[in-house]
Image 1 (cartoon, rainbow, N blue to C red):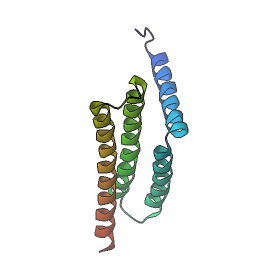
Image 2: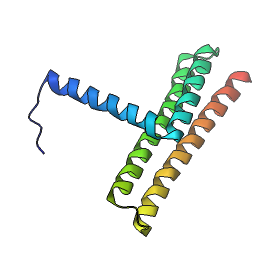
Image 3: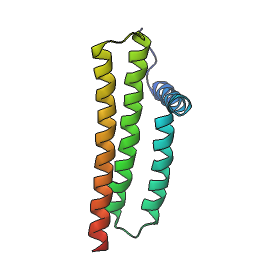
Image 4: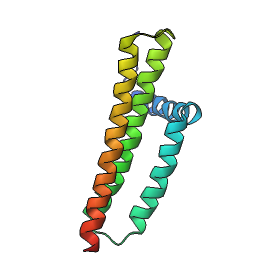
Length: 122
């Protein structure tokens, strides 16, 4: 389906679709809600901590990356579920890989926070 909208209207439409995606993730994905709340808390803590600007940006960026990957994982799961509910090795693999991406991103965020806090507290 071709989209003939161009210019500023296309940007407005894209922002609306993005907002719909965020709302859908919040409404339908418990993991997204949990990670979003944790991210909000982490961002508040990062802003409260007495760290330099680069450390603060890295800390906030790491938790925002978790949210981004969780949204992508949720999108993969929604597409796989849309295709069919029967068990298929490829469907399971796609869901497992999306979950693994979220786990690795969470581990990365933890590593970033620990590393930066460790260097700051020394």
